[in-house]
Amino acid sequence: MLCQAASNWRIPIWILDQSPDFPASRLCDRFVEGNFKDYDDVLQFGRQVDILTIEIEHVNTDALEQLEQEGISVYPNSAALNTIKDKGLQKLFYRDQQIPTSPFQIFENKEELLNAIDVSINIPFVVKYRTAGYDGKGVQVVKKATDIDRVGDLPMMVEDLVDIDKEISVIAARNPNGEVITFPAVEMEFHPTANLVEYLVCPANISTSFNTKAKELAVEIIQKLDIVGLLAVEMFISKDGHILVNEVAPRPHNSGHQTIEGNATSQYEQHLRAILNLSLGPTHILQPSVMVNLLGADGYSGHAIYENIDECIDLNDSYIHLYGKTVTKPFRKMGHATVIDEDLSKARRKATFIKDNLIIKA
Image (cartoon, rainbow, N blue to C red):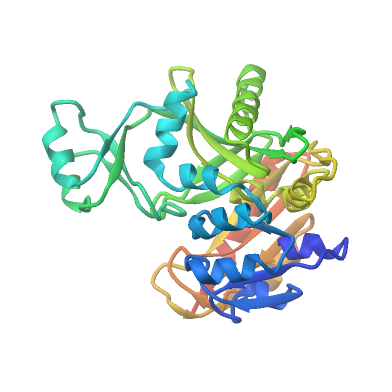
């Protein structure tokens, strides 16, 4: 989707990834086969480009730091990435900067966690492994004692289970000149099994005061992390009326996909504007929207087959984006659909129709 946005301005995009079968290889100007977790692969690739950016946090930041020292523009910066990709360091950053977040503790292993239960931490709580988590992976909710059996013996961050009223996200953008702008807050609803976003509603159904506070927090965090590009800030609104920062993603994010059709500037164009140090685009809503993630059907793994896609494409004001992943797996993100309508209830009904009828099997 970044390549698609860049094509409007004929900006050449090079991609480093592991296989030329990956979707972006068919849209970029040059595809380089390599591992973005490998120091040498990232270093060699980065030395060939003018600006280096990411689409996932789990990259080799040692190589990024070296490239920064050599004068390559790396956005977001390696120091911010090191903080964000370790959920323990990320939480410590919030605490040190007095940014509201849920109470937490950090443990090096499972034994430390077990020793702390009923001493400094009580069930229920949430376990997040400190590194390599993505799309709900590496997160376990412990609601009863037997759930602890499923917790792995890894460094972890453990936080109180928040009594959540709503989950929202605000995407902020910042360029090297220090200009910052935010997109309107969106409301997220999560899949009960896969622990990833199922529906996204824009605008979020929240009060003006919550909306203002959420935007202020997003601006504060992107500035304090000195991030150039995008930062998606996911937050909880608790039932007792507080906004708490959950976690952030320093890149175009699932909670901004609806901006392609629903907002004056898409998150992908905005990311390009930011890293190229152009003026940031307007972010106002053109039409309210509902986005639904298109997930691989449970119980199927293999070459992807899309059932009933013609019926879904025929829906007015509905925009289906298939990512071109050749292999489907249970709950794998294979695409998304955005429905725009002044009446959000109508948009929701169409989005639900697409979710229920566009079946991705093998």
